[in-house]
Amino acid sequence: MKIPANKNQKKIDLKKSFVHFIGPKNSWRTNIKSILTFENNSLFLVKECRAELVGANPFNHPGRYEFLGIVDDDKTHFIRTKPLDGNFKNIQLNAQMKNKKNIVKADIKYLSFERVNEIVSSDETLSIYCEIEYEYESIKYNLTSKCEYINYNTLKNNEKYLQPIMGYVPFILDNNLRYGYVVIKVNEKVNGNLEFLLNEKSSLFSLSLDGKDNLIKKLIKNILNNLLFFMKQNNFTKLISLENSKINFFRYI
Picture 1 (cartoon, rainbow, N blue to C red):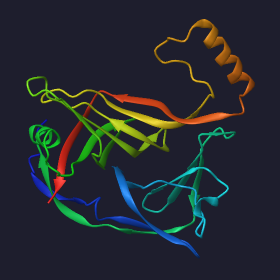
Picture 2 (tube, helix red, strand yellow):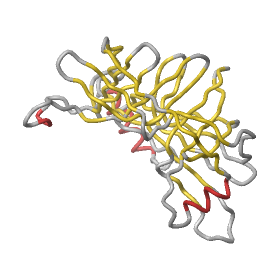
Picture 3 (cartoon, rainbow, N blue to C red):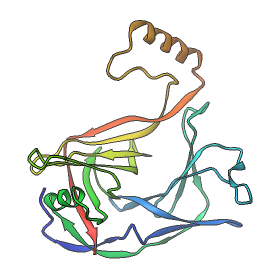
Picture 4 (cartoon, rainbow, N blue to C red):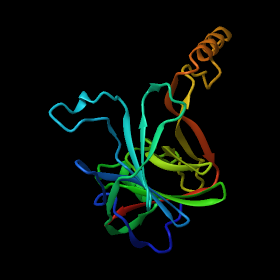
């Protein structure tokens, strides 16, 4: 993993940038979790929450769904998801709600693979961020996120690796806005595939991915899925695996 030639530059500071959603009676401010840029567009995925009321008993809200916002240059997308429901797609609204982005840019310093491995395997308390470049469906993307969860090698004399997993992150699939998790194993020389696991509706009873379901289990699950075709589970099951990508780690100065 090579550090970019331009070692220091400015990027949007995820620690200090926010999005305000402004309603007629209630407004709210939320952190930006990840940013996807492509062509002349930027998507800002903000912190998710649970359905709530504004009042003495906030969780008396009749809905039990997760609420997520993704903002682009001129639209606000709200996504509501429940573990189980009768909808064949998640409820996604192009809300006519005003939003105001408070964007702060800060100087960054790119970090080498060795330096990041040293940070995560020690008691250093530096926060690490990354940008990932990839191409999908003939469009080039740049994804920025904080690395809140990083796998690394325990033994010093073994192969050194880093495997950050991040989410939620935005993703464009078949020209539609989706979201999910992203992960990649990074080595000193060769990286693994960049993989996205996207949210989607699926049958109530999932078949085992490793093929360990016996014939009777498969038959029962298929029968129940056909009987309960009107119910869908909401899960992260849509896999996108890309061979070519580039990741750079950095920290804010």
